[in-house]
Image (cartoon, rainbow, N blue to C red; front, side, top):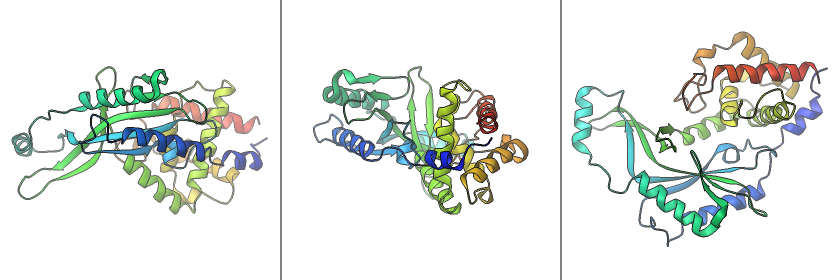
Length: 297
């Protein structure tokens, strides 16, 4: 028996909006206060993640917040020629206020406001839920520039993103603005089916975890959005049942899995051993468990 359309419709609904908005605005005000140690710096606070992209579900309560320092930046130079790299290194000096100092100051500001609710984790600073405040993850970043051309006289070209260092010292670069922009365009190009279908798949993921069919962490929301982003627009159709079947059949029969990209279009989606990619075995496990849920409802 397939999953009923009524259940899929329920799963398509967006999760909390009011509490998430209040949580974000409250933390944003703390981060942007004119009394912070970095108040004189050039920085931005913005959303990323499911709530920021309108794909959040009721089971996902976290609010993902980025604070990005723009007074310094990290660069990717692998696409430049040797001459361009030499010109780059001759143009810029090392920053004196870096990600290390910025994260130290942001952490101090959050601890002064929220006390023991604040934990400095592997990638993000977590603020625990309390009352109406939802759990929030604050990622402290600096600007990232992946250069495709560099010339200080005639002009340069680069893709702008964010980067940060995890607790092991590994740098992670990503592109949340491009991710968000591309999801919005995909939503428009699928007659507004994309975001509800992303929520359906995320709710299916939660059900699979609770039923013990996959382990927690097998199918992160970011990668679910990326997978759905690759589905051809014509596969989004007139019912949630038909959409879901089309997605599952496309992945099993038609998808060129090695060529799938993340929604930001800057990384491949399925690659093993990369912090920015989904292990294909995990993606396969998610799809296979979804098919089992569909067949045995």
